[in-house]
Amino acid sequence: MKGYMLIAGKRVFKGEEIEERFPYDGSPVGTIPRGGEEDVNLAVESAKIGFEKMKSLTSYERFRILERAARLLSKRSDRFAELLVKEVGKTVKEAFGEVGRAVNTITLSAEEAKRVLGEEVKFDGAPGIKGKVGFYRRVPLGVIGCITPFNFPLNLTCHKVAPALAAGNAVVIKPSENTSLVVIELAELLIEAGFPPEAVNVVTGYGEEAGDALVRHPGVRMVTFTGSVQTGKIIMSRGGLKKYAMELGSNSGVYIDSDQSEKLSQVAEKVARGGFALAGQVCISVQRVFVHDSLFDRFVGELSSFTKKLKVGDPRLEETDVGPVIDKQAADRIMDWIDEAKKLGGEIVCGGKRLSDTLIEPTVITNVSRKAKLFRGEVFGPVIMVNPVSSLEEGIENINDSSYGLQAGIFTNNLKNAFKFVEEVECGGIMVNEIPTFRVDQMPYGGVKESGIGREGPKFAVEEMTEIKTICFDTEF
Image (cartoon, rainbow, N blue to C red; front, side, top):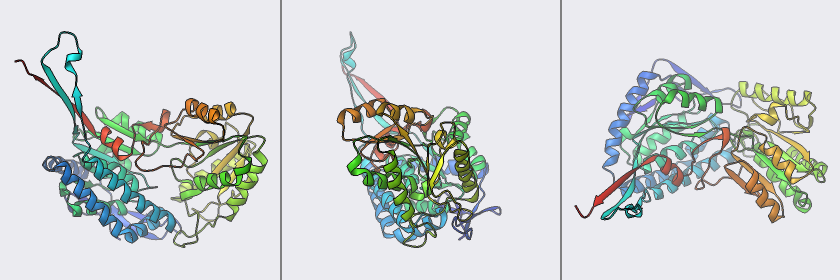
């Protein structure tokens, strides 16, 4: 499949191309143009025109277009799921799940188009002020640069683009070079649904070329990015005076309290599914598990037993539970982290083997040192570490011993313990009796510390993608 850039509704091809490959076996999926600064400049100029056209659309019209886009995506779910399997290496179940979530994200954004609200400002609340009345309203920013990741290229693009359009902005999208084809088709769908062609642009290519040019462009009023901490810091250092929304990952922690004996097998299954979905390539994958030492051996046994039942292999097969990681370089790094954890005293309880260039067995490692990358960093692979702790306080301290703070979870029957965990764990989202991998698309989603800045979820993204304009009338003049 030959991909292209989409600028002002026109398909743009270039001589130099990037090849996309199926992560499972390396077979060709298609090509995309290697875009650069010149293409970004054209796309931003297009988006400026698109923004002027977006201003002429009423809230209701934006609502109806997004609603139409959601219906179109639902009707074409087979096609979009097929692209997700080929580009990302998702299992069939995971691919259809992402399409369903993307339909929901667009639908939620459609509703928010009618809720971009302001409120009255009480000017007479200040001393000596009479006869002044007014309000503020939220207005769109203009051109928004959307830089999207490989792991959820459809739904996470929808999380950036649909709220931006709902609020009346125009967008330039720079998708991951690994997963651009599905994003191109989404952009064409949005235009087909009724958005001005100039308002939805896609520039393909590498982050350090097309992405950097988009970040630095003075015509871009906001950059919304999902990716690594290192890249996020570079973006903010180069982008200058504009708004940012940054979702930068995690090494999500879970604490399992001493009162979970009767539900331990259910908890273990939840943890496994949260750690091994999409081969662990989810920002809120379960990575670090801290179990009260009275349940440690039993929990490890339950977790290992369930993990060994997972079917690893070709994501195109219905029965596959765990597919490949995105590429060989990612697999090399993950295996290095497993080896390092083992050298520092960790014990591989199950898995730990590499089955091909990109297939890694779902792996459970116990007693991992705090010095290990597996404890400190984001593995983004099918690996779960499990350590014993002697108390809730120790569990909280371990979870907080991280530069990240996206989401965390606790399993407990003790309400006091649950509230202590909620109050003291430094994360943007706390899940009680649920894994941190839990997310619904309407909730405020984002982290603290190096997990990022700002919140996603259509309602909250609209707030990020608008600015306040204050209006005052003097009724006595």
